Amino acid sequence: MRTLTSRSVLASILLLSLTARSEEPLVFETKQLADHIYELSTDAGGYPVKVIASVGDDGVLLVDTGEKEKIDDLKAAVLAFGKGVPRIIISTHAHVEHIGGNATFGGDAVIIGHENLRKRLRTGLYLFDEFPEEALPDICLTDSLSLYFNGEQIKVHAFPGAHDDSDLIIWFTTSKVVCVAGLCNGRHFPSVDKVGGDVLEYPETVQRVIDLLPEDVTIVPGHGEDGTIEDYRAFHAMLVATTDLVRKGIEAGKDRDTLIKEDVLHDWKAWEASYVSADQWIEYLAEGITGVDRKPMVFEPIYYAIRDLGAPAAVLYYHDLKKNKADEYAFDENDLVYIGYKLFKNDRVEESIPFLEASLKESPKGTYAYLCHDYLGRWHTTQGDTARAIRAYERSLKLNPENTHAADMLKELKKK
Image (cartoon, rainbow, N blue to C red; front, side, top):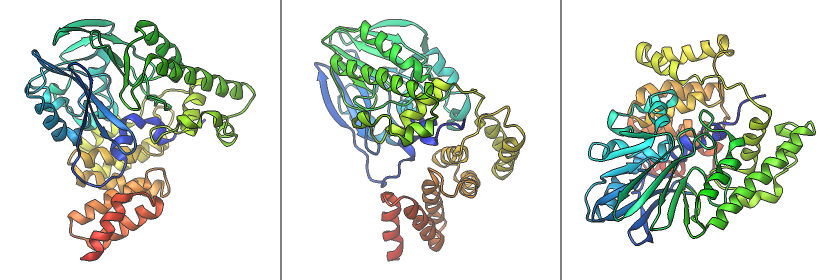
């Protein structure tokens, strides 16, 4: 059985940042949820990324710190409260759109997170982010803890293993607000981390969270709509029902592709979003039900090969591993895209180019081929090679006519 598609494999890690969008100023919308609890949200290509702020006499406490690319906007929004920089940060889990500002705030704030969070940020694809020590948790938990801040008890509970292996929920007990982060996605299908998550644990884990909470709380997911405990029960019911449908199909001898072709989740189409489609949710469930040999992903050896040998040699090493070590490592169609993207976004642009070009050679019509062309267009633009930039953007737009960044850049470049 082949591995999940790229969007399903690491959706929460890269989908936010890989979504092409124009380079306009990014602004957080602030909504008051309770007396001193605020939700700061920003659009990430069709769905929100949220940061929760407790603001009061003790200062500012943040639940998550959003995307790295938006840290200046988040900092401005936090300072607008008039209480200075955060004193405490609670990181709900490892995915990069939730920890992007940790390094910026971590020198002044105490960061709380799951014990697994420190391990994850020093392994796998996270190696390419090269998080400094100040981005990692100072206080780690594996069960629960309580803290008192801005006049109320804040309960932090660990529920690892469903969405990710470092998931926490944060319960502002007096304010009656609970940030459940990755353990709910509003009225949409959730994602499951390939390394730290287990789709089959999702329903039981969500039920345990529901059993913990009172009836009058506001449920705040990391993405998706806020809701009531009844909305959360509806989310749980979706998990149970869709898992049962896919399980019955598998038991009847159908594979994942057949279930997708038969549209077995047609009654649940309303739960689709840009985050996870019905077909992608079938992929998660089918792989979880049939089981998969979870070999380590190939990112770590490639990271060290880049460091020791350089990017072009590391690309050759990747192909050598794929040819000769497929029994030792898991490979995905978009490995090279992920690596190229990470390098590009972390200001190692020249090192990213061999990976983007190699990805296009290997998968010219792959899921993220249009983004490879888009990033190559950006590179050629910075190098002053307008002709090659135009060709790259045209190829990107042909593969994805909705890539507004490529369309905008073509208009701009063709004016010159």
